[in-house]
Length: 423
Image (spheres, rainbow, N blue to C red):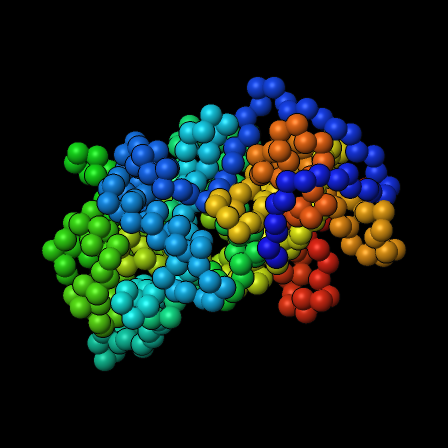
């Protein structure tokens, strides 16, 4: 659902609840998730240079080209375009960019295939008799096998998530906002994305000489077949993955032939990625049985329309007020036809019934704090109420439905997840 953000105001009516105007909370920061702009290039480069992350390389030409492609992607036609790349930033109340995240409309095409190892278990059994008179010795072995695969018609990929380390445990759930707001955007532009979503998670990595990042799996396997370091291979793969398919062995690889410590990290996540893994699992992602051929990091996938946030994001008319203390926090967002095309904040939200809502119908309005609506551009300074045409998208705290976990239930039979508190 697209939402416009006009700037003329008229007071919204509600039924069964009392709203009250509130002033912005002094000294309380409000972080804004929004589309990245060309004016963010210096800030993003400084963030990349400070963190030196694989997700955001500190290379100005790369960042500049990424911003240009992102701007063109947001302005694109309603038709699906596999080359789209959407770059978002997280902005503090002081205007400083403190994080980024991305969406790739399609990961894997004829120019740059999606390459992976399929992890499979193979069993072997034999009756062994060492000598003619000895007892039969049963041998049953299970081997982990790595099969190199690729696809030219891959899923939509979520990536590029970077947050300043000192903000990882911020009370405003900044990591959640950076990650989950992308699903609200996907819900609002469903036709721009594939029917499967992919998130490649980082495994345990090590620091090499000079602080460079190294992958034990790459050192034990990839380096031997390509002659490249992990850093060199990662850099080359940003625009060309063909070398993997041409140089890696096409026959299955027995993981048991790798060093024991390397075997243990295949399909595992690093300590800084455990939270991201749990968050993805909470909204419907599962381990796909595939891993990254560079470092063995697991691939988590989900059906796009079954991701709880994509499925449950709803549009409401915004009302200014203070939600009930028991109201759930969640993502409140706006979509518009001009830049920034998408903005979102993490804030409490409370569903309301409008005066003209028919009995038995769902809520049509949502109560949101003034400072949040101002950050979203829904409410101009000095304005008391949003325009009657204003709409916001709301996605509450992710929580998998019971039916998702234990049974396959037709979508129409499922009850809403994390429903807004009704007044």
